[in-house]
Amino acid sequence: MKYLVVLTDKTKLRLYVYFYNMLWAISSYNHHDAKVVRYRSFLLGKLGVGVSEKVNVQHCVKLNHNLNHLSIGSNSGIGAGSTLHLQGQIAIGDDVMIGQELIIHTSNHGMENNGIAMWQQSSEIKGVTIGDNVWIGSRVTILPGVNVGDGVVIGAGSIVTKNLENNGIYAGNPAKLIKKRS
Image 1: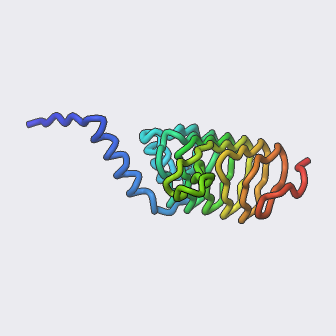
Image 2 (image 1 turned 90 degrees about the vertical axis):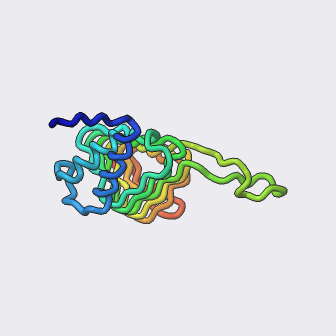
């Protein structure tokens, strides 16, 4: 006797989440062609992330809030242990290398009114854009509203608070221009 199984969209979504969570902590060879990396990318696409070709999302990457607020360009990767807070849009360009434990924030608590507790004030949401051909070192933090230009290098441990111009090498807290790439 044959059985016909019909899955609702909600059930499919739950299955995609289940399988992504199973693959979440599995370490993999750092290459977009590794099977577990391809599976992760496939599942992220099914969960609403805009995933292009040859995307490498490493293990233990946390994507909080709205997965459909994230797009990742071709030949780009997100290092292990990174956290992306997706209240606002995050657009990652093509050929982007991101080291381990990156943190990107897209919202900030209100703090203007002293008469109201900060947690009760509305949040300000601002997207983050990362251009093409960018290298972001390990343990970098990028704050809401930042645009990282094309060809930028950000040194490990930097905190990015303002827009970064094309082809610059930045480092520090806050990240400052060290020199221009030639």
